[in-house]
Image: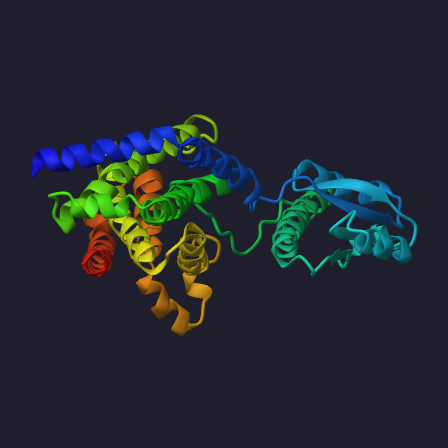
Length: 374
């Protein structure tokens, strides 16, 4: 049995290394996806171009503009002279926000009731909400500083706000979005590549007529299943290490847990993704059908796993559906391991859920694959 398995695994590796397209998918695609999503899927608001209509043109108005500049959230790209100019720039997508300082800003600031207007482009809700939070934070910080300066100039003690909230951020003090995205990309890349390759490889055997040659050989059906998916377990682990190394040394994402524990939980994810690919191969007759079948499973994984959108913000029905998505469990696992550095005890519920789901998918796929061999 061992010799038969080794021979079949060796045959599968030879086919993989002889197919340049498969090698590109295995080696190059993870790197491309990592850099594209690592840079593009970035929720940090930095140097957002804005327009400014300064009707006051006083040292006080220049001070508030300097506060916006120094925060590195915004870049003053345009100085305009009317609201029509602002509307034109936003409509042309040259800016996503605009700051309007009224003519009596300096006088009202001395009386303690100054107001400035911040216009945001709501067509991009993600950028708009992030810019709104940044603007409010800058405004609150500057207002506190102005109150303190005015009090000292009046000869009194510096006025402190009645409530001060001191925040402390653990694990990611600078709130770098790459710390959240890169670990998630490990699961996303593995889920996509291993599922697609497993489905297309078996279908390719059927298209070329070589699957019948395997059937007539003295090999059991379950040995054929193991022999076909075993190489992709090794390749999946190699992709995991590849993405982790690039994420750590290029994007400076920490790896705070044991590498053995990370690779072990990755194998549990591969049980699900390879099972889905095997199941897709029993449904499809061509590689195109296999790709479409896999795509039908990948889309729910992207949107219902918590990769882009928080699960807590979804309707209760979709939250329940997400428990059927293997990637949902793995994203919690890999982010906890890499960023928090937890042990197995902290993620045991997610590991058990992922293992149960993976075992069920692999069992159904193997039984259906056995029926297709008869």
